[in-house]
Image (cartoon, rainbow, N blue to C red; front, side, top):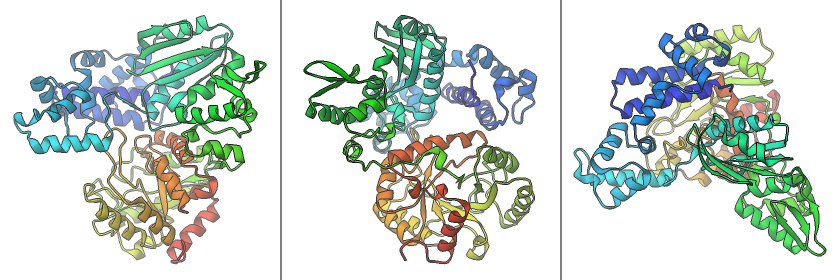
Length: 581
């Protein structure tokens, strides 16, 4: 199997987490965290290198290289297997609750037998945490609120990006079989929801038996839950459940509609079929009397037979798409091909960038972008934000680099929104910059009205072109802070400020639902990777899918404009004539 750098980095991040839960030396834990970061930032494809080649990369030593080579050649790391066996699996899930660190998770497990979210919820309800040293009623209240805000469920959900990596490899394996004519993932993953419960794979084949056999016998599988004639359920090595269904090629389109969902979307589509005297199920669209198959080969055939346009999967949530597809008002949502550039990215000029400026520019140019904004952190951020002197030096470096690239390198900054909405540097220093994103990085626990006021105050600044990751959420780790979205959208329209759809699969901020509300209010959005490494530039598709879930069209997205259109937007903001003022 061709493991990606992201796959490898994930293994080392898990090692670091499990070491924390095992009470290991903090320096050892930090070493594995640094290794995960170095692997994720590597520009070379690790699977193409030998051990010496891996060890020569920045931030990767001989011991780490040996473990990487072990994983790339065997699909396992012995040390990780041992840690997984030693640490109760539920503890990892507990540490994803904000405010619940590894030490507390271990204490809860050892003293109260808490090993899952359900058991933690029960322990809080029965007020047992307050009997433990260092904890109390306030701890219970804080954890209860954190779980509620995070939306923590008793069953684990997997971030979209992790699930796609698993699903794509499963599909690639099955696609090699001679009997398979088509295969893809379906369910909530195909609809590009932020997190998924399990992976649904749908294959069309002339003979289902060898497909099911290949699925359950794969080296990606650690446990077989069920193996039947029509459906096989397994647990993958990543700990995620995967379900395979195999249908005849002539039924593939109908099955794909059915198993993509959502349930609510399918109900509405079936109701439309019934009104037309038809029956729709996973095998096809049928006329009832006399019984006759009307359509089933492709999704487009099924929708067309119902008098509908094909509905992109991210829109299939029963939020008006069925009626819109029927009456011809379904929007032509933005696609990856519509984007002209990326307006939020970092380099190693600032503290958390993992790649050089030239590496990032070269990678952006390789993607065919017309422009890429380097928006390194500004001076008020503790993590080595750029001083004015460093900003001037970076400008000189960009000017020299620009001579070698057709892609326009935009001089930018990610400004920090202060408590009162103030931002870094002074206005005269900011004005020459090509594009400025402003984001909240501190004081995230302030009340909603206060957060809203500070963000709107920043939007009134003529040099703030976009607001980055509006709610500050980290999916599965940190809930977003409370903001008044309607008030922010109104201010965005009034001031001519864009709102960012952060494409990092751990953020997706704005969410799809927030994008919908924003574009309906007339807000211009950006879709940006917030890339800190070359690998992060590959996340743009997640942002596009999130924008699609919000029904955003190319006209709604700032970085679908050409360079002249982008410059006009920024110029209007600088001159105080942007928006509806």
